[in-house]
Length: 346
Image (cartoon, rainbow, N blue to C red; front, top):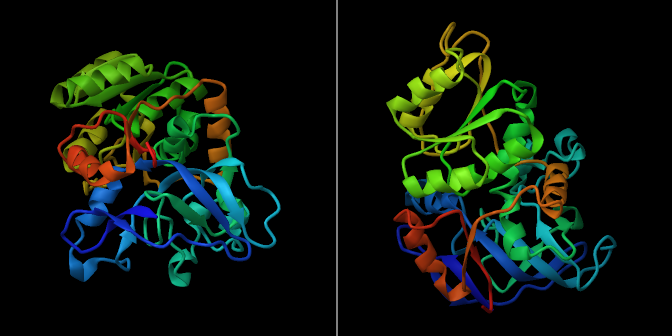
C-alpha cells in the first residue's frame, strides 16, 4: 500500500510503498477514507535527531477515518463495512483515567510504550490503518468522513478545552479565541453551539479573520496590542472571562494575560513554546491558567452528534495521498485555510 512516511530526521516526508497490515485478535483494519493533516506533524518533524522519540520510518497522520475492512478475533462492536473515525490518544485501558474515557490523560501510556497513530505508531496517511482496539473507533454512519475526520483532533481538542471552561462561558461573558486556523475556527463554532458567551477571534491573517466571522465569531480583530484595548472596551473594562490560545507563541500568551479578567480561564492549546509566568496577582486574581491535550472518547461521540445536528462543520481542503509531502510545504508556508484532508484514491 502507499503511505506518507517520515523516513529520516531533517528530511521531508515521502510517499512510499509499505506492506498492508493484518488485524490480530481485538484489532480492526480500516480502509482509510480520510486522513487529516495537522501542524503538530511539523513540530514532530522539527525535532532534532538526539531528541526524536519515535522509531523511523513513521507513517504520519493522527486524524483518521475509514471503512472497516477486516476485524480480528473477539471484536464485536463493529463489523466489516462500518464507517468510523479513530479516537487518537490511546491509553492502557485499565487505569482510572482510562476507565473514565480519559485515555488522553492515561498516566501509564508512556511507560508501556503506547503511542497514538501517526505519533509513534503507523498513522492514517496511508491506504490502510490498523487500530489496536474497538474502543478506539467511533461509528459515524452516513456522515461525510472527509468533513468529519478533523473532529478527531481539530474538533476534539478545542471541545475538551471549552468544556473545562463552561462555568466561565455564561451570557454576558466574553471568550477570546487566539488563532482562527484549523482548530480555532472549529472552537468558535463550538463556543456558539454550547454557550451564550460573546466570541472574539484574533488572528494576524485577514483571511483567517474572515473565516472566524463565517464560523460565528461576533468580532474578529488583528492579533496585536490594539486587540487588548478593544477587548477591554467590549467587556466594559472587566476583561475576558476565558481565553483560548490556539497558537501558544510568546506573543499570544502575553496577549492572553493582558486581556483576561479576574476569576477567568486562560487555556494554552497551541504548542509554539510561549511561557506564561504565574504569580500572586498576575494574571488577575482568581484566573486559572492551564494546558490541555486532545479530549475524551465520550467527547468525540458528542462531537459526532453535534456534526450530525449541523452545529459544527470544518472548513477543509481536499488532497490526494500522493500530494502528502506538498501539503506540509503549503502548511509551513501558511497556505492552508482551515484543515487539510487527504482522501486516498482521489
